[in-house]
Image (cartoon, rainbow, N blue to C red):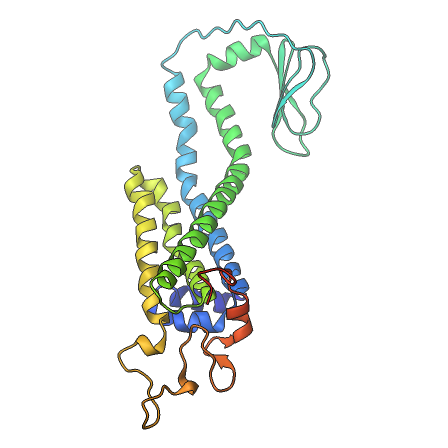
Length: 294
């Protein structure tokens, strides 16, 4: 997907009347690719917006530590072997050095290597006591840790919201299809799923809002409700033509003109609907073969 196509789809996704064109011009795969691309961009923007907050974080930590004097840790710790917790390794049975990047807590010393192609740093227990009692050193250490963890946090942010939004889009789209079909409506599934992927931009408003708005009601619930309402509105622009204001009637006997069938899978005289081949929209229906199938 090139930039011009993406920007064109982005603009159309904000306008319900344009969803007929979006569903006609894009397959489900392309719609899902648009969704993935949009989430990557929104995650990067959110990461950039977090930078000023992360810059202030070490200063806030130093400020709080300056209120504490004479910190003393007396920890009696022993291990039967190496204990790993992600990047953190605890091993009191050996004096081995750190292998690769991470943090190693060994007997009477702490060793860390946060960046590749750098030498490990060693802090003895006495150095550690001096470090925690020096607020300026705490700020430098915490700043290094933040820089080290930032890429991992951005990846976690993306993966968490990828799963979350994908589940929401699929569930809500399926709910809309079930609701319409149980109401004896006529609708194919794929245009609805496509619409869900394109309307997901309203769900993703949660990402930047979480930075500036603390209330869950406003930073999460409101974007979800906007997405839900917007998706329902777009369905009116995807409804069958025989449900619109002017029914397509042909001939004196009042029979419907088969060449102007609706966009939800009714075959035209050429065997295709406005969105393309019937096989893609009918045989590919996830509800085919069930009581909700077409």
